[in-house]
Image (cartoon, one colour):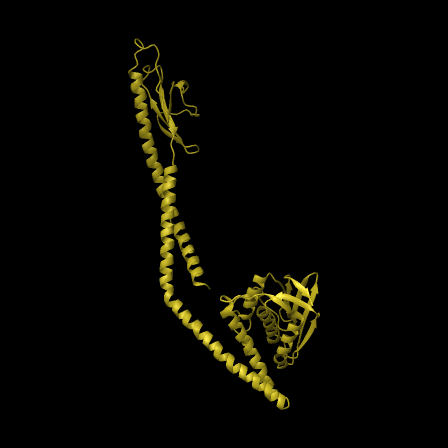
Length: 389
């Protein structure tokens, strides 16, 4: 896995976890700040009510013909009788019957203060109501800014520490990768020498069953080598597509594995339509074919049969591998890296994981039909451009 993607993913998950943990204190903070805002707004409404009361007290009906009721831009007010019916009001907001005190509507953020007046003193009014819309927007803005700052800080801090903690493992991984690359190079050389010398011996001498077994074993090792080599190069190299004679290429790989199958007296029956040319990458096509043939041989019974079918229909190509071996217990699990259903059969459990990554990127559909104890069938459908030879 890419180290940067791993660090980003885990830093993001850790940040989200911290953000979830901050929800409770954030809720408490918002509730408390709303409470303080209501107290502050109640105090503001009381100040407005004092201004109105002062204006009414200074009114003298003997000197002034009419009372000029105070008006404010951000507040509304009104005078009400003992039944809470308006005597004069600038409030257009519905007010339920209330006693004296401070009230607020959480639905529309409207708040008002009811002041009980001395009887028969202010235009026969019993209540003075002063109200307005108090806003919590500033609180929410502050919370968003604080949360954003905290999560950003935690995310950056998490990336920093994950990177620092990962340094020893990164160095170890680089050394391990280099060791694997060097080992792969060292393995490839003796494998090639063994194969060349066996071929030269066969040309000069009659067939030898022991050398045939050695040859089959080296081909099995070569398949594992090719899988490991592909894993190493997969993230660093591009695999360009080109026209491939799929019919001839498939037959070549079947011939290649015939000696491996002969060790268990398994016969490979090929039903290959002629002249099918795929627009695909040869290395990736080899990984698909080799891993399916290798698994079919590995999990088939002695003297069993493996069928390999290649057909073309309606501008799509079906590549089928069918065996009558032990079958599959868990189809979903076989594509997991390092998973092996039968540890006695050998291998590293990386072949089908490689195949899955290839077909997912290429848009190849795979249908698996398997009955445990009876065999399996893998059908690969290529929908990429196909050319007739």
